[in-house]
Amino acid sequence: MLAYPGLHAIWFHRIAHRLYRWRLYTLARLVSHISRFLTGIEIHPGAQIGRRFFIDHGMGVVIGETAVIGDDCTLYQGVTLGGTGKERGKRHPTLGNNVLVGVGAKVLGNIVIGDNSRIGAGAVVVKDVPPNCTVVGIPGRVVIRDGRRVDPLDHGDLPDPVQEALAAMRRDINALAASVAELNRQYRAERGEADAHAR
Image (tube, rainbow, N blue to C red):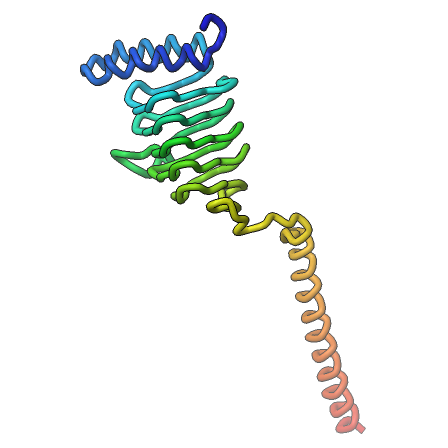
């Protein structure tokens, strides 16, 4: 109780959120600002947070104004529940119940993360996630749904953009070489005809 910033941030948020609902916006923001200073966790007073919410090693966690978090959710350090800057009104994510968001993950925009889903460390999620899924990568994609792997990550099969660029350049060079050879052939043929006429 004395040395867990995630717990302290939640306590501060409960106070700030109540003030926000009473339309004491400046006071609510002041409480959230003090909380951020003391804990390193920034929760906008307007965010709606369910029961048994847990922030583990919370430094750098940011939760936006219109974010909605269900019951029994867990966030790790560096998580952002943010907006994309292109939306008005509801512009932050909604997390269902029993959602876990891993270290450094970014969940952006007015999207819904379904119940019992897991967001992997470092993922960037910008689209809705169905319930009971695991999401990884940039951009985030579902790799496990209802306990079954749906998109195995075989790193040996991942595209190599440098190799693809080199292959495209090789094709272009070969096409240019063929064009130059054809132009040389035409030039020699025309030159031969001109020499024949000159004689």
